[in-house]
Image (cartoon, rainbow, N blue to C red):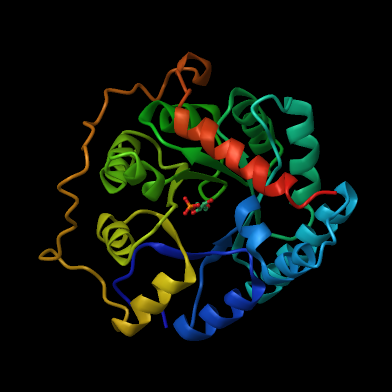
Length: 287
Ligand code: E4P
């Protein structure tokens, strides 16, 4: 059962409905689930088919993704399920919108994941205006967080998630947990319409640090949720400290959340690399 002092929503980071079932049972609750093209590719049914040499046509791959998402959503009634559009850096807004609108009717309570490109943000701005829930993903710097806030101003709380990637920042020597803290601090100057969903959680310490920071949401691989259950669903107290001494800590920038999103420099090498990796993983599944 959900611990009383838990302030952060717990999502499972997985493309496998079997894991949804397993961790729902282990924890007694889950607040939602996130998927992405790489996690979809790792889903057992998809893996088995590809290993058998049977790749998907463009139509079939969406049918399979929809099936997996529907299975997950059925296990999590009323909870958010994130579905990611296929997009390269060049994908035009119209194509992102077509996919997003289609995915949005696959299940109730979908959050459509859009990469942080100019087209992704433009699509996000339009979609929130249509009442679609979005999850802006592959977020690595403070200007990107400012731009998402600005592009989605006026949306309802719960409609917009921002997914900063902790582990991928750590990978390049930048403290990802410190980045989450900076984004939470930045958003304290705002109206609270964007929820911070800490992603790319690679260790139990990352997970506990997100609980201590009281991030709105954290999405977690099953093996870390398992460690949490072994630790009797520990909630970090004042004494508990996250240490990442070898990683660079960036300072909180002076970001004006009232600026137009087009004025922010949203480019980031990690966003570019992340898009490339998702594109490769998705295309590897295609005939
Ligand atoms: C979830 O929304 C993210 O796509 C996921 O957490 C990325 O994790 P990774 O950096 O370990 O691939």
